[in-house]
Length: 106
Image (tube, rainbow, N blue to C red):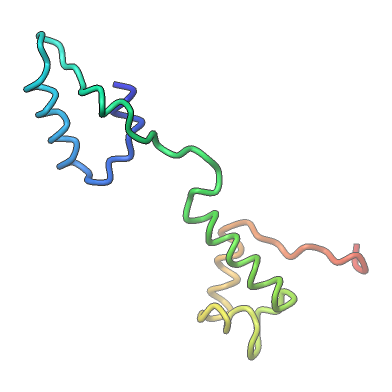
């Protein structure tokens, strides 16, 4: 059961169905046994930074650093990202991104 839950299932339900069907055919006893090669497959990634929000956060921070955290105006954050300034501000709030304080204002 642990091998089934760790697997990524890139083929979704069809792949799961195929694995179960193969296990039913190859199991020698009344209990279901997975093929040994299945247990060796890649486990589900659990490292931080693998989520879309993490990639989005990193990209937004990189763009904002390049334009000195200016959102509005030509060549600044929103224009570089191809979105409206209000949309960029909403994404920043959603991701919990706040402008770092400069040493002068701290």
